[in-house]
Length: 410
Image (cartoon, rainbow, N blue to C red; front, side):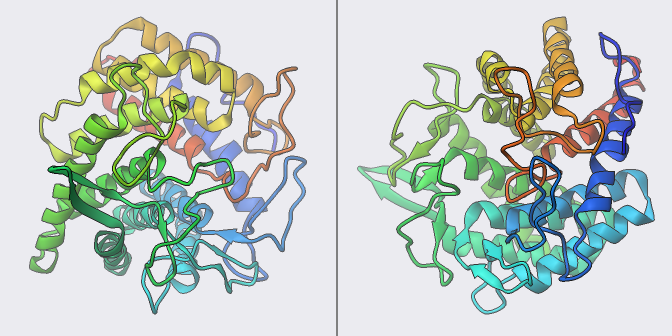
């Protein structure tokens, strides 16, 4: 597994080749060789921080949908059959096992044998299923996958999107979770670390991400039967940008607020710098896909500035992956070397401290003493080939685009 060809000197040089080497030799190879469950179907649910496989671990919808997105994006980028085979495996397993054929939506988790375990409907998980299926369509033009994505979009809009008037003001958003049959549920949390909010920043960010990808593909589908859906996705994508600008973003601090009640009142002042920098570029991506001059650039810039110090303190794998993309995105918008330096520093930290050069993939985080955090998973319910593979794919694509104008030197 050991291959350090993606290690680069400071400052970043040969960025495209470095990102591709990291993606293919460190990340994708790990998931290809270690995580395919040939015995019970789909993919295993867990490898711990000591690289020990847990074959009977539960299988999460978010993990499977992120695997689907990752290998679909790799298929689209590289056109390699092994990636397409695994993308199709993830797509088939999601549709066969995670989709609730009776009530709609997706189950939150399965037992290792593929039978339903937790059947609640978490908006976050359904959004990732849409995200992955839309990417599979981008890679393969599989109309059946697109139809499932559209059906899940309609499930979200029918059951989780709420719009009502409170004190003469419109309140709208996507509720965090519901029961299997779409009824109110007492505990709506994504995890034990989260608060029990009706509306959350995190879920809205990934609905935005999913709808951006779905609209990206629907724009190019010229069929009468999807025209109404295309218009609804566009409308809701604009609504999500508005929610971020006017509900979730805190103009006093430059951060995103995290948890809200049914009237969009924040429950505390906690922040998440990793989500700030991720939102900074995802909002700009949504704007670009809409092909409209939405006023998000100033908001994006403030988020990028507010996120900087917190990311460096947290030292978690996903925060650093998003920092690389987010600050490269800022630099490409305004070529201030400060942003390139921040991206460069995040990349260097990843290579020096987070990458497992021997066994593949990345560690969850770095402990205060500088050693890898092995108490958290290398692959699992929340540790997926998504933030890090997407970072590599974004760099590869952005390099290819920018070298045409000689702005980004490879």
